[in-house]
Length: 144
Image (tube, rainbow, N blue to C red; front, side):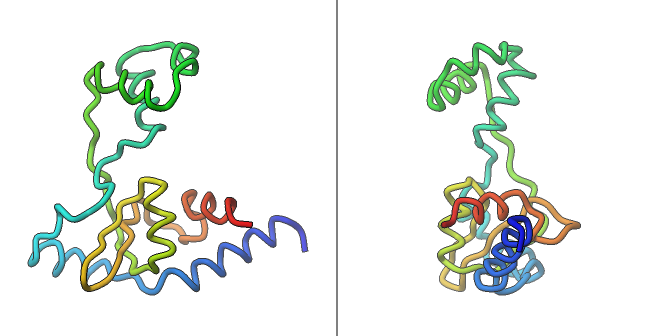
């Protein structure tokens, strides 16, 4: 079995084990609208390093080479000094997930809603299989 097939198999195994159900209607209609849990969404705003770097290059018009010389914290500080204001993630789907996957997604600044009813991942893309999501690919690639 080639490495691509092994990676695909590992991704499918993680998805089948750690993602329990797509519960978009439940979360959008009941938890967020009726129970007003918007304030409980972790990583609701896109403050990712890639978004900050994009802002510094395109909005603040800072040379890429200058940005490359800064560490992560310096990049963040510079972006906020230059007026960076994070935008909320556009969440298209909500998936009921395991605590293990929630912790991995938190580390990648993905939106998470953790309540007494369960833990959901706010998926910020749609229209393709979860196995093709870059964030899932990234998490699986870091596993031994």
